[in-house]
Length: 171
Image 1 (spheres, rainbow, N blue to C red):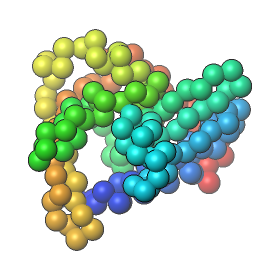
Image 2: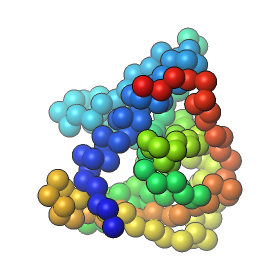
Image 3: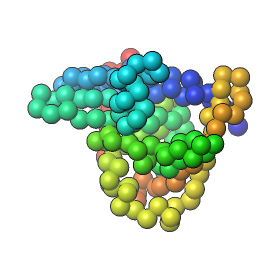
Image 4: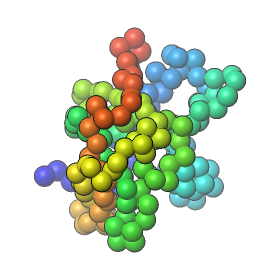
């Protein structure tokens, strides 16, 4: 099984944003701010780390916050994180996110399929009815740092919208 470090996973998400999602948002006419990973920056600590907000959009009338989840493989289920670090039993993004929408992207960079949804639609589900899955986060040397826990929820079980990037030039 291929293992990825935290930094590699973070880079995949940043490349998706830069090469696909940002051009799409600009095409749609939004002004935007990308919250960069930076442990020393108060914006990252408060907005991204504490509330799981990666992007803030401005449509000229209101702000909309987005959380990006990007994975290389294509699945028919999302990993709804309930515990972000099993070593310390910290809440997963599925419980602490304050983003208006989650953008969950599969297949980056080859076969990109993104789904947009509101967390409130998942919170309506009985999570106990779903299979529990686990993720692992490694350091750059391949050593296991921690495991995550979440529910594997089929896309058909909650309201979502597919994002169409066909008209937008990707970098």
